[in-house]
Image: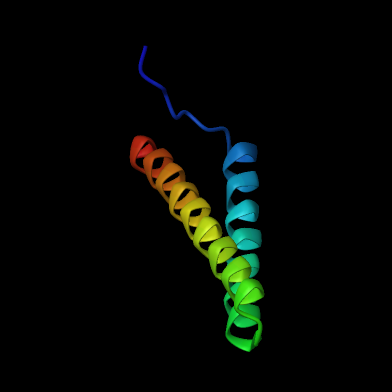
Length: 71
């Protein structure tokens, strides 16, 4: 059974808020990674930034699908 992405306005709002929070975390992790001197911390923040980038991309995909279905 295919997944249907019929989001309510409230669900879309939650996804928009989540997207903003993920973008903020991504930005912070990237900055922290740039500032770290210790390789293990730099790697930790870089890995977390990559994970946040995946979350951002998935949220954008969900929102895009929802917007396309409304048209």
